[in-house]
Length: 505
Image (cartoon, rainbow, N blue to C red; front, side):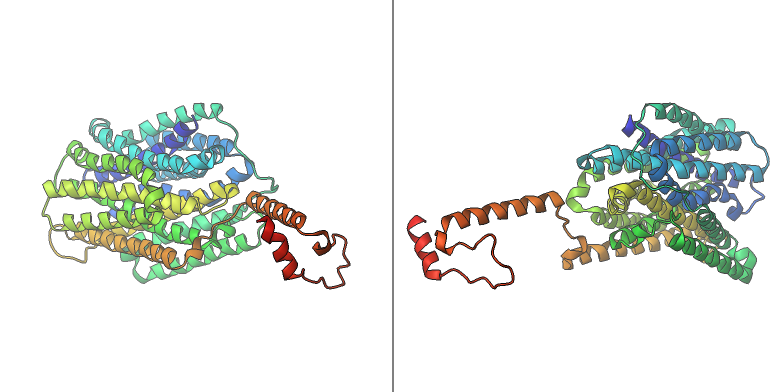
């Protein structure tokens, strides 16, 4: 049940994200949203991403402090309420507010689910649990892409959010069967002010990117405000007893490297997830055919994530990250060489799925297992925060490039967005390759920590050997047990020692 609920949470969150990307495509090419710029439409996704990214670290810390099952249940309740509002409200501003509520719920669900999973399973099963947790996101994407086209064509774009509400209710009922999870002994309230400052800073950054072309130099003031808000969140974390950002994680170089790779993965994967349906809808394909073209990508993600979870011990987390970035970048180049959906385009779609399927468990393992057991939920929150921040930034930049292309041709905007994805793939591969090189040239980067139990056994063994050696020595050469420590001891006569050991051994 632990595995099912943990995987179900990621399936639900990713299905919800896929629903927003499909809804953006439907609104873009239907009268309902044709009058709105793409930069405003993508806030259907960003409205949920911003609270997820901002509150993940705090929610993960709350899960560690107050109980992971409890935080998971609260998050599911909030998520379901937001989903119901998304389906029923009419005003666009209310829809965005409902999406933000769903983001708050998802922020509590994600770290508490994996934290509960890792905290209750033995260490030998944790990598497999992470692989299952990651591959479930691909399954959620697959199910939504396979059935979302039919839902949108038959009932409209709002129907895309109905399945996640149903699954959320089922997961909430299943929470009653889960163990409560381990809790840290720290008392007190976490840094709520720091969490809101972090949320506001991320929201302003996304707003600045999405309005960069429309507002011109006025965006500079948004950037300054964002830096001030993020600086305030960091200052709160440095002085608060239970900060929103666990700075202890950021003092670990292994975690920082994993977080950077995770950020790039978020920008790449969500950027591609936005570009794919827009590319096909722009060519005039109906929604049902768009879903059919996208399905192979999701199948490749699910299969590859499962296989990669078993390979991570052999090739390492950064080996998977390097391979995944290489495949995604190569697939984007292959698409740029085509003039429309072809067999090679389908091959590229499958390659993208394989690349994302390798990146998902690779980045999850690289970040999560860099933390200590009592920090699992915090590490998951910080890692997924990086993915969501990267996703929000990637979607915002992609939308700006599509609406304001820097290339020429009928598909100039979409080609520019794909070129951006190639650049992010190169950056991700460079991070992974740098880390792999450092691990080979600097073995001390990942020091082997000898457990205290082994040190105690070693001390006992040495004491036993010393006692046996002392018993073999003649009485006159033994060192007195109660000797005066102020007086220097004299070494035994080598001749005597040789005579003693010679005949016996």
